[in-house]
Amino acid sequence: MPEQRLAIIGGGPKAAAIAAKAACLRDLAELPLEVVIFERHEIGAAWSGNHGYTDGQQRLCTPAERDIGFPYDSQLADGLGSELQVRFSWMAYAIAKGSYGDWVDRGRPKPTHREFADYIAWCIEDAAPVRFGEVTALKHRFGRWSVSYSDLATGSPKRESGFDGIIVTGPGPQSTRLPQVADHRIFDGVGLWLPGIVVAAAQRAAESPDDPVVIIGSGGTAAATAAALVRAQVQNEIIVLGNQAALYARADSYFENRAFRDPKFWSALSAGDRRIFSDRLTRGAVWSNVVDLLAQVDTIDYLQGEAIRVRHDPVGDPAGVLMVDYRTSADPDGVIAQPASVVIDATGFDPWWFRSLLSKTLADQTLREPVMRSTMASDLSLPLTGAPRLHVPMVGQAVGPAYNSLMALGSLSDVILRPYVEAALT
Ligand SMILES: Cc1cc2nc3c(=O)[nH]c(=O)nc-3n(C[C@H](O)[C@H](O)[C@H](O)COP(=O)(O)OP(=O)(O)OC[C@H]3O[C@@H](n4cnc5c(N)ncnc54)[C@H](O)[C@@H]3O)c2cc1C
Image (tube, rainbow, N blue to C red; front, side, top):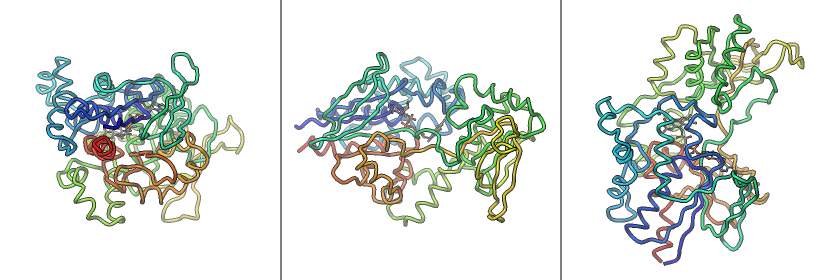
């Protein structure tokens, strides 16, 4: 059988899901599938609290049972679901760590992000080799990819070749939707979470107690940021400024949840209905337990408005007052200036960050983002001309609603591995 080699950029839950399933397929069905993971910091870096995105202490919004194999209904090989459950499930992990009984007795709490990072690392340790270093380029030749990276230990450039497919993971860096202004009172949804930075933001807010902290954004990061500032004892008013009418709450519901793992249901929806579903349940939606928490804090307010820029007043004076200019949906021509002690840009991340790793010819193709999204293949690879498969699940919502989250990592690994399993069997 021809060997199939895959490279995964990023050592997070998607890498764990794909590597674990490939390991089970190797052992159960003797399929020659090799997976190599490239990670710039540490496994679970976006969850540990050591590298931004979170302080590691927050809990997942999704339950532990939505682990890297959920929903364990793989069609790729007989007995695959059971093998995966026994070796790589959250339950297997808790048993291996001796904490299963305790976890059940405590009411099966959602893991903290730090605990989740430890679970991912445990899975990957048994599933795939990791090359530590920042990936700097993805090139292809004769139908195979090569990955260039800067070795974490030595800093020296390295290259590994011969990959049939590449999977890019991660939400990406902070998006730059707003013009960038350098100021020590401005933070973003990645950097705010680096060790010590929430406390620094709270101290800067205390220097201008009469001006509110303004958080720009209306999704999960904005809500988590508001909650973290309250925990850091910020006394200023906190304004969450979002372009939606409200912080929309998302609750657990069978009818919504099952759409994440039911491809038949999804394929029956029009493109418009898919977009409405995704907007309602993923983008710009905050889990109801977080919304309830924020609603109990009377210093937090939500304002509808689209931020246009953050600036100094007077303009260009870095010692001046911080201002957030925004417009409301009712008056799109008017500009309102909101003074702020501290500003946090929580407008989201850039899932197309990997463009800078590609050749100009391929990068230019990815600029047609709406076309890329709507014509993505069922295996979550981009419709790139002349290149081997490049899977980007974080932009795969037109194919399925679960692919940019933890909602059905077992389905995600199935759709990505399927073409390689078929190739290995021919
Ligand atoms: C704080 C936070 C909490 C979330 N909570 C939930 C939740 O509770 N439930 C849910 O369903 N979804 C949640 N999401 C959304 C979503 O699940 C994740 O963003 C996404 O699925 C993360 O998994 P991943 O494997 O794609 O990437 P990540 O876990 O983000 O891993 C990507 C990795 O890539 C590495 N990397 C980046 N660039 C390079 C490079 N050039 N070279 C090498 N490595 C690189 C990073 O260091 C990182 O470790 C959350 C997102 C965030 C940011």
